[in-house]
Amino acid sequence: MAGKRAYLSAMGIDVWVRRTKLVSQRAPQSTQPVHEVLAQVAELPSTESAKPKSVTTPPANPDQPVPRFSMAFFHYVQIGICVALRGTGGPIPKRLCDDIARFAGGDVKAARFQQLDWPMLSNKGIDQSVKAAQEVVTQKFTTLPERVLVLGAGVAEYFGPLKPLESLAVAKFGKQQLMMVKDLEALQQSAAEKKALMIAISSWK
Image (cartoon, rainbow, N blue to C red):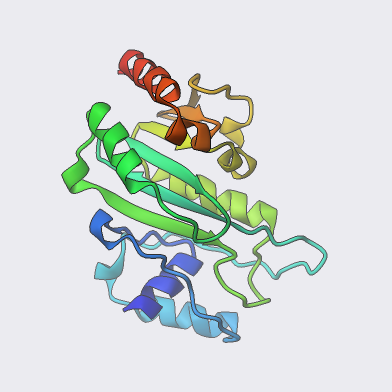
């Protein structure tokens, strides 16, 4: 089952899990040809994920740098939260996210969770450049609710609509409204920062 989820994630197909299963779903190290990976994905049961979307896997350019980052995505029905994790596979501040979502009117009991660790595979035949990472992160955002809170300025590097956004300001991305807290560490350590966020969320409602 874990292997199937890894293949789905690697191909950009969303696989949500319950928040109680917050474990890093890293893809196995693989040298398997891309056409075999695609064939295995096509044979997976439809119950593993939502309807697969069209995915292209252009050959990797060895001159392009491969970024390394990790993000967590929480879907609380009424609000989504994206968190920039430290390094790859860093600690997930799930209690903080639950508290914020609860205050913002989110359904904590129905929360779903995804973690994106980049690069997803070591296969040299798959494009995992900065541009490819931006496309995947953008796709992840489209699966979140209409209100999305972003914790950590690092997310903006891979999601363009956040780049001009100041902390606690709101921007639009299609039907979504985005709010960002640039300094996650300060938010975790400062009562004043938490209070400022609560005030901003209150007006955001």
